[in-house]
Figure 1 (cartoon, rainbow, N blue to C red):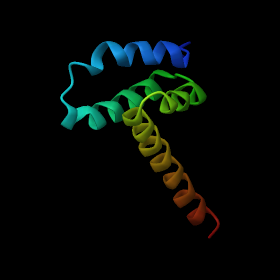
Figure 2: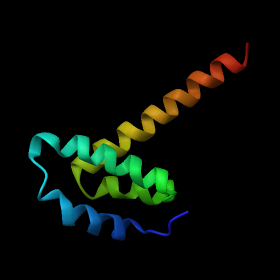
Figure 3: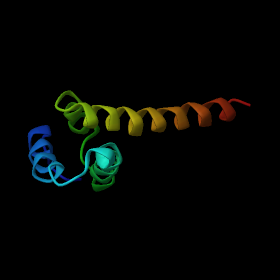
Figure 4: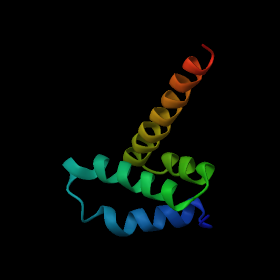
Length: 80
């Protein structure tokens, strides 16, 4: 697990976001969130960055809502 605070994550995002064209920012944000998750950054810290910037908020919602939907889907079929 990687020790990072949401402030650390925001600093990293700020350092690269200016180089990303507006049309690609959401895709980049989703990939960024997925990378943080795969590195073992705590979910609460990742979710906290959603309050910082709208594209990150949308990315967090996309990544974690999709993940929650998959878990709910799996749970429905385990009951059968």
